[in-house]
Amino acid sequence: MHGDGLLIQALVYLAAGVISVPIAKRLGLGSVLGYLIAGVLVGPFVLDLVGEPVDVMKFAEFGVVILLFLIGLEVRPALLWRMRTAIFGLGGAQVTFTTALAGGTALAMGLPWQMALAVGLVLSMSSTAIVLASLEERGLRQGAVGEAAFGVLLFQDLAVIPLFALLPFLATIAPDAAAQAGAHGGDLLGDLPGWARALAIMGAVGAVVVGGKYLTQPIFRFIAAARLREIFTAFALLLVISVAALMQTVGLSPALGAFLAGVVLAESEFRRELETDIEPFRGLLLGLFFITVGAGLDFAVILAQPLLLAGLVAGLMVLKAAAMYAAARFFKMPGLEAGATAVALAQGGEFAFVLLTFTVGAGVIDAELAKLITATVALSMAATPLAMAAHQALVLNGPIAEGPKPAHEPFEEDPHVIVAGFGRFGQIAARLLMANDFNVVTLDSSIEQIETLRRFGRKVHYGDAVRLDLLRTAGIDKASMLIVAIDDQDKAAELVEAARQAFPHLTILARAWDRRHAYDLLRNGADDVERETFEGALAVGRRALVGLGFSEYRATRAATYFRKLDKALFDELAPIYGEEENFILAARDSRQTMDKLLSAEMRKAAEEDAERTNLAESRRIVEKDKEKVGS
Image 1 (cartoon, rainbow, N blue to C red):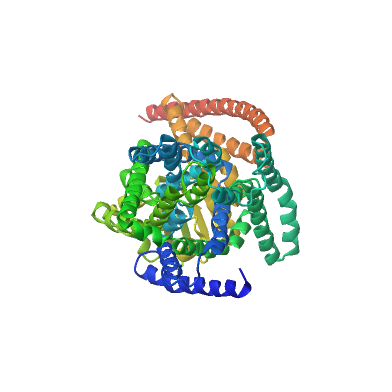
Image 2 (image 1 turned 30 degrees about the vertical axis):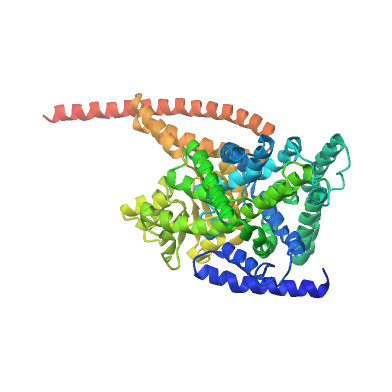
């Protein structure tokens, strides 16, 4: 593409987005649908202002690469483990159910079983870009719906690698030479034998993992020491582009490589800086990607068979929604959340385009069928924002989900304290503060919890406290304290880390799930932590001692001394937390010492209690004798 052509195309795309997206937002259609409409209008089949958007599509697909890199930055090992059910359970079930339904339908329409299976696998993919953007736009990105959708999308992204290996075994027709060349694109290993390609792929993945873990940190530190923000941003982009190019060279998806790089860097101290620097590029390039999807809709195919395509799009979305809803209900998701997740994932995805090109090149699906499926997938992507808007209007905000709309209430002015999480823990802390005339803003991300609390007269605001923009709106710049009382361990640690970096003036008190979580919170910047069950369990232990015959004095002294020793042990082990072997050995030795000290203190307390009892008895006898003498 020549310079003038590039400038004109940039002008057209940007102008289309600037005009169409605000109008779509004002009409309640959402920004994603606005971008798609803009693409249709400037595309070759309507105004024909940009011609075939092939070159721009290649550039715009980098938006998906950046999106997956940012997603990878959020996927720490602890999060993967916590979301194992959503990823491998729910995600695996969605792909299996969708493949079975779509493949079975294709088989019933007369396709060979190999082709039908390939069609089912291709159509099981959903659009990561459209789903996450639409969920975020509607405030559903955080919470049960966002987590379930994210888990399924992550499984689909991971499933692409084995699909590239599996699909060629389903070939039944002669490969399309042009498509075959396009399928390999930048793959320089296409002519190598299978074992050599496998070694090259493993080598590339290993290079990303090792390089991301050991080589990037010194470079980031060197650049950070120079205090050149633009060079840090340039290196972040260079890193993403390099990984994407390496993955493409060995025949893997660039987006998948970027996701892997993000996962490797998820534990880096530069994670927040990377997210901040790359985020603007993500929004702009994703918008460009959506425009090119709209511009790439083949209206020749659509107009040739409009009724067939309308039926295919409707059938695909209903089928995928049914499969996702069945999978969600199988894993015990509530009906409303399962329905919202099903509607969000009812379309085809970006990887479907990649897999279709690959399957045509491998002789699995013929070119004409691929064109029909491509049009169906593209139209389903375009229809998703409409479907989600309709579902939100008719179901989430309709008679089925009547209730308060907490997100629209104004926040109090100049709060003293912000409490994130208003469950059983946060309520007690907030009530104590409010009873002493402190202005407290409370946030919770569960609409059901907010509805229940408001029946009892509690004022709670809806919102995900991990979002720094929401905290700023709530007045955290003027608050002096943040109390973190949310249930999710990973989100609590993430909130503490983000709040400490963004608002260094804050005193941060955090609820910890257990001792290890408490250490994580302290390392992330909490000023103090409280293990949620510790004081309650200690109180039960004290009452048990009284029930077993101890005096109130002896039982209270035992509980007080236990608290003191446990705090000393907690502080002693904090410096070596993370060094697993040393931590376990030190904890074992410290606990033995604590048990000995506790036993010694309890013997001393028993002796003192006996002395107190004897003294009290002696005084009682003396008083009784005085009464006798007096009488």
